[in-house]
Length: 253
Image (cartoon, rainbow, N blue to C red; front, side):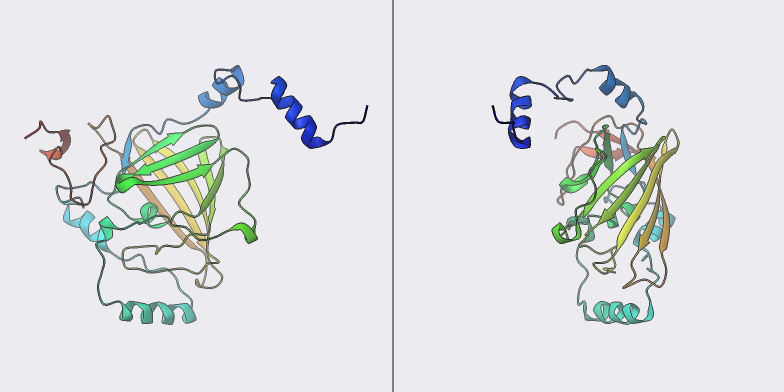
């Protein structure tokens, strides 16, 4: 009898149920993997949202609206200045796709982190979602990459810290419309610094646009008094409201 090739052998193993590592979702190995993960449950926000959807506190509102000023090199700074001058209007920043890195750098939108051994998903208001794969897969090779609003993110755990590398993002880094080149890469270290504070140490490298690696640290606070995700729409809603500075679900009209 002739020997089986690799494809035939893989198909045979699949049919017989051999080698299906994820067949039992409650296996001891999987239970131990979940037990090692940090508790990022609940909702998180960088700025305390006000009744208008953005920060109400004057200091936070100023920080929210302030441009982040990437450390451009001379050539790219000139390009950025020309692009800014050419813009005739500022879009409604809340009601457009913000993506990565903008939502991590500065946004009033809440997000929820769903952490599993193979993937961490961050879901934001306005139906935006970021997928960070921690199942051992590498970043896509250069010839398979194409720019998207969130790029491609893969990561691994170093203790309780999620280490993430991202490439191929297409959107500005802030509300001012500042952009980087298609050579930009992003390295993050995300961890809990205490029970109610999530920290993201972000290093952006772009040999085409930046004079040097750009390092940013951002903190997100666990949102109190909210036990479920209530998606927002650009038109807003009348049920998810602030009462004495705290979110609550109001009764129907």
